[in-house]
Structure formats: C-alpha cells, structure tokens
Image (cartoon, rainbow, N blue to C red; front, side, top):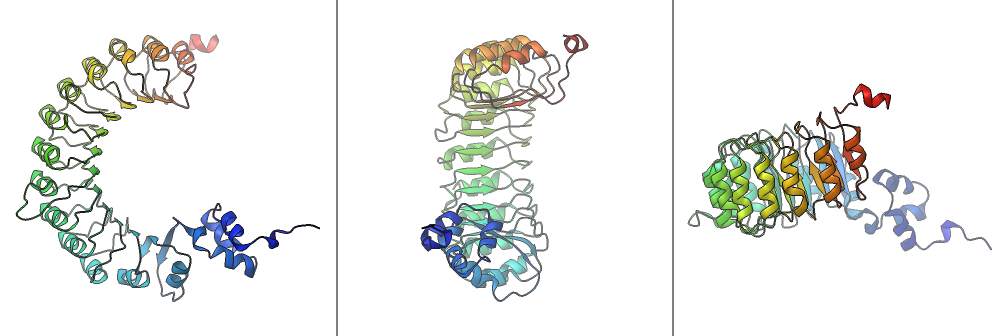
Length: 400
C-alpha cells in the first residue's frame, strides 16, 4: 500500500512547511484545504517578519497575520495612518519603519496613544521628520522596548535622549548613527549622570554613536561610569574623541567589541591605554586611523592578544609590526589589512606561519604583495574568505 503525502498528520505537514521560505509558505496554502489548514499553524510562521506596502484598506490583512501568529512587521511604504497598523496588531512585537520618510511626529503621535507592552523592537532609521516629540511618546507608551533604531534621525537632540533615559529602562540596544545634534550632555543622560531628571538606560548592551560629531572624551567618561553592561560600542567617525578617552574605556570589563574606524585623533597611545587596562575585547577596528602604526601591533600583542577580529585597513603598519604581533594572537580569526601598502610577502609569510586559526583576511589594495606571499596565505588550514581587490600579478609572475 502506497503512502501519499496527504496522509501525513497536520502537525507533520506544519513541521515540513516551517522550513520553506516565506513565499513558498504562502504557495502551499493554495494547494488544498488540508495544506492550507496546516500552513496556518503558528509554528510555520514563527519568527517571520511581514513586509507590507500600506497603500489602501485591506480588512483581511491583519486578521490573517494574527491567525498565523505573525507579530513582526516591516512597513515598506506608508500611505495610510500608522495607527491602522497598531490597531490591527495589538500584540505586535517588532515594528520596522526604516526609510518611511513621510512619517511625522503627528502620525506617530496618533498611533501611540496607549501603552503597547508587547512591542520590543522599533526601527525608525532614516525617518528624518521624527523629532524629540516622538521620543516623548515612545518613552511614555513603549516601556518594554529593548531595541530602538534612530540612525539618520538628524533632528534628535539631547532632550530626546533625556526622554529615552527617563522612560526606556529596559533598552538594550540603541542606534544614534548620524544624530549630529547629540553631545556629551545627551550621553550623560543615557548613562544616568542626571539621576534627578532621569534614571538612565543602564541596561544598554549595544550602543552605536557613529558619526556623532559633537561627542568628546567626556562622553566616554559617562559611558564607562554608567553603562557598565555595554558589550558593543561603535564610535566610528567620531572625530572629537582622542587617546585620552581610551583611558575611560580601558576598564570596561563587559566590552567585547570596539569600533574606532576613522577616528582621526586616535593614535598608538590610545591603543596603549586600551592594552594596559582590563579589557577582554574580541573585536577591534582602528581602520583609517592615520596615526596608528607598528607600535599599536606591539601593544595589541601585549594586552589585547585575545582578539578574534582585528581591522587595520589603511593604517601605517609594516612587516615589522606584523612580526611583533603574530606570535601572541592565537585566537585571531579575522584580519583586515586592506590598503596597508607597506605590507609585503614577508608579512604574509609571518601571518601564514603563526595565525593558523585565521578564517578571513582582507588584502584589498596591498600592492606590494606577490603570488609567492598569496600562495603561503592560501595554505592556511581554516581560511574561508580572502579579499584581493586591486591586486595584480606582475608581468614576470604571469610568465611563470
């Protein structure tokens, strides 16, 4: 007797359907009644984010999403009121409005008129009309928010951060990329330095301050004192921070990833401060820091030897610096040294001899390396990623 797929229990069908991509999940629901019923099982849609264009009324949209147990939504275009979404999905967990340029304080204010305890993630990146007024609504009604993305919201000021520090005590991740009005005062609010006005976001683990040009070393002092649970800190393109600020960060025991890319005032001295502290960094990025040289690699070998990822693109390092570092870096998995034009085959040979756990290396624009050095690198037993953009063989190598 042959067994047909139609004989499978609905629970088994649902388990199979859960492995399909979103489009195919919808297609199997159109095959027959049995498959439709199985495909509506909530386990099939667990973790799925619905991507919606809200252009016209659709009475069946939100009941259908709720029947499937979908609680994560991304709005690709918003031509209806945001309150339409909030009313239609009262148990929403994640709302992504990234790039909804027409979203205003008024629209957000009409949507958030009562507490939404289920909402944990809110993405307002590039919603450029959003101001501190919206952050007041968010702080008042989204008390359980854990992730808030505000990258590119250039009208946000220190007042908005005060409101966040007052209302969002469970916040774990905050992105303030290119919020250029934010200064040391605002970071102080987040770190609980103004307890009389706001408790602060003391549970923060991920903080992105990329391109916040008004920040100085005082912000780093606030962060080190108040945000003791911080694990990831992105300070890339923050031109106002300096080597002195690294002293404050050097004793943050929970910090495991630090991004200092294009921080023009960070030099070997700053790396020394980091290496002399009690950090247990797993990832460090000092790419495009013009004052970083071979001495940094010596400091890394002495005090940051547990790194798993190190980015030094366009830094003034040479084979000598590589030689001073590689013997201590037994845990290094990723090394980015693109555009380090002083690195030659000798440096690659040192890397191949000692960094045996390396899984990825960026050699983009390393113009002094040749086929000989690359042959050594490709022999690394764990290597999976090798970036060679702008590398060319010499004529003599082509002949060989």
